[in-house]
Length: 254
Image (cartoon, rainbow, N blue to C red; front, top):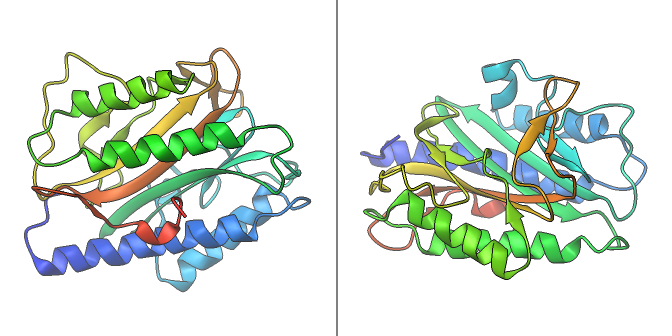
């Protein structure tokens, strides 16, 4: 969407606060021994307390309030009573929701407890790359150039990017134009970021894979070559200078 009034900006901020606070509190709530279903139910309660509605449930009939991925899962992880979190797991939580007609999206990967499997470097790379990408976004910048920056930084750090998972426009629905803000330079995409538009920027940084493939449950995506994926995402307002980060309260850069 394009922000044209102060009321629209306030509406986007309120929806963004709901998903950001939910993400932060879910990350704090996660601990070894609980199921991803328990963690997801907690996230659903938080959204409800703020009057927000789960976007994946509303839009796709997703069997959970949030998407929770563990270890080799790359995206759209389906919460389950059988998936029990363990010390050192690589966990990703993606929270998107609707509030009063406005939609916001954010996510983040983290290591649960002690980093006994060495996932911390990947997580930090994803955070750093997202920050650099957002710092370079303003009205008039080509979307493909931000994709080039993300892939270049990933390669410098020794990683690949997932090419079929992308950022996107957001605001009046979960996915809007621009529909694909890729993590690589798509030379056929000549679209530029528009000032006053709202977009969800997300990194998908991988140790091995370049494509995410759907699994037997019909939802969960895993890398085509195995390995691990870290994702971080903010909903932002594009300006003529530094973007406004609507989902700053999620604390993924803290």
